Length: 416
Image (cartoon, rainbow, N blue to C red; front, side, top):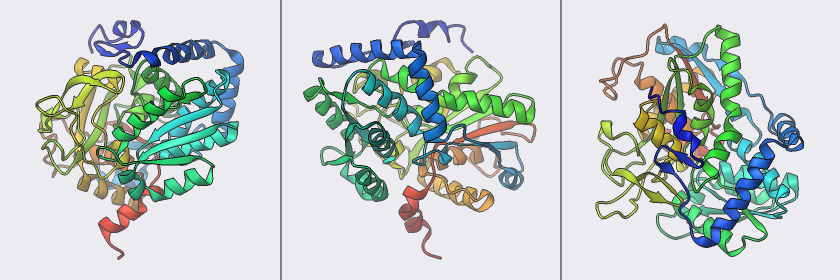
C-alpha cells in the first residue's frame, strides 16, 4: 500500500488527482452551502442523534452479517459472509445516504429534493425519506431504466414522488443525472439535489461515502465477533461505487484486507458493450481520466473524447464513470477492480438463490460472480490472479434484494 494513501485525502474534495468541483458558476454557491451544512452536521449532536435514530428505527440497522454455510460448502473455497444490506427498509443500502441528505435538506431549509435513479432503489429511498420528512420529491429516471425497473417506478409514485422520464441520450442513469442537475440549477433556492452515489462535485463523493460508512463499521465489528480476525477479502459491486466504498472505507488502514470491486462486464470488452472503467487488464476498453458531471475520474470515452454508451443487464451499474475515490484506490493499488459479464451475474444470482435462499439484486449478483470467479478452477477470468483458498475469509456486500429484477430473471431463465 502506498504511503501517500491517507495524506492525499487531506486536500478537500480530492482523492489524489481525482474529484474536485467542475460545475457551472451557478452551482458553486449551493455546493459551498451544502459543504458548510455537512461540516456543521458532523459535529452537531442533535443531527447525529437523529441520523442514528432513523438508521435504527426507520431503516432497520444494524443489518446482519450472515455466514453463507451452503454457498461456502458448494464452492469449497473460503469462509463466506454476506453483509445483508438487502434487509434494509426499501431493499437496498441507498436508504443510508437518503436519510443523511434528507436531514441536511431540512437543516438547510430546502423543502424540495430532486434525485436521479438507475435501478430505482435510490429513487425509492429518496421518495421514502421525502415522505417521512415532509419534503416534495422529484425523481429523474431514464425511460430505458423505467421499462426494466417498472416495480420501483410504481413504488416511487405510491410514495408521492413525481417520476420524470428522460428520453435523451441512452435513456439511462447518466442522462437522468443530467436532467436532475438542470432542475437543481433552475430551482436552487428551494431545492436540494439528493445525489445517490459517490459521484459529482465535492462534497458529494465524501459526504455520500461517510453516510454509507456505517456498512463497514458494522461489518468490521461483526466479523471480529464471529471469527476473531479480520477478513482477507471484501467484495462489492461498483457502479458509481457507494455500497463498495461504504464497506471498504473502514478497512483502508488494514493492508492485509484485500478489497475487490466488481464492475459490469456486460456483453464483452468492446466499447459500448460494457460499463467497466477500471478493468482494462481484462480487455475492457475505453476508459481514461476526464470530467463528467462535476468530477474528475475514469470515464468511458470514444477516441475523440465523447462519453461512450454503456451496457449492463443491471440498470444500477450502467454508467460511464466511477467515483473518484475508487479511481484513486485503483491507481494506488489499494483496491482491485475487475468485471463480470451479464451471464456471469445471472448465474451467480441463481446459485445464491438456491444455496442460501437469498435472491440478490442484479447489481449485487455481480459481486457474488466476482467471488465465484476467484474460487472456481474452471474460470478463465482473472486467471493470472491468486485463487482464494479455504483459509481465506470473505465478506460480500449484498447491496440490494432482487424483487425489482424478477422480470429480468424470469426472461433470462424462463418459466420452468
